[in-house]
Length: 320
Ligand SMILES: [Zn+2]
Image 1 (cartoon, helix red, strand yellow):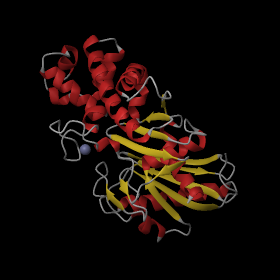
Image 2 (cartoon, rainbow, N blue to C red; image 1 turned 180 degrees about the vertical axis):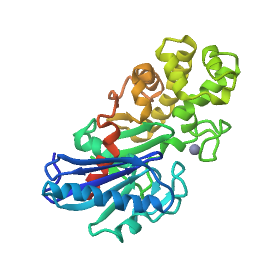
Image 3 (cartoon, helix red, strand yellow; image 1 turned 180 degrees about the horizontal axis):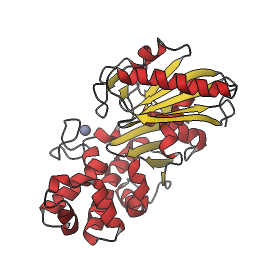
Image 4 (tube, rainbow, N blue to C red; image 1 turned 135 degrees about the horizontal axis):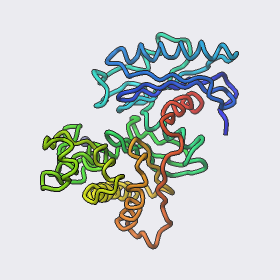
């Protein structure tokens, strides 16, 4: 599948720490990329405008004209392109990102949530090619989600569907970054893995990691757990197993609601899929209703890596 025969498409993925821009030609070839730290507040919009101009200039060197700009952004975006809540961006709540950028450039601007964009990329050239119904979950600092329904990304009534990270799975559970208690994200993201490790260390386990942080257990990171688990530390592997079980709990809840053909998992933690992928798969099928009687639901890693959000943002211009 290739983009429609319009001009080239530019996509910019604005994440919590980095902003990645991509230009896609009308034959599906990547013409340029840009990768910079994410800015704050209103500068997020002016940065997108700057990056658009730089990418457009590069595209024009190869004779391509640009027909649209798509923006994927880490937060709750409505269909008008207003960013309502972005816990991982600084001073960005309420940003009229679409309006601000569109007033500065001469092509149409489309804005969606970053994980919805990543899902578009997976439909276009990834794990969801030819798939009608699927769930994409990203396990990173937090948990992102996107729903693929009837072959397209489902945005819900106001554009904000697909946020499984804040499903409450333990009403009296640990505090989540959103301010609620017991969200899935507080157990099954990098922050969740860290929370589980701190609790285990407080109970007197994880001696190696506790030594690394010199007893300051609040200084434990998810990377400490995956590093020592990769070295074969049994206590870290036990934390990883507990983490995998929590991931599976949320995925089974999502599958009960959505009946997907497959679940696609992305985000930074996918780099350590070998540590917990099998355990997630086993626990998911244990927890899933009628697992032995229904069609098998595979759980697969994403195929587009870190470029997925920007690539999908390009495709917003093709699908809207
Ligand atoms: Zn939450």
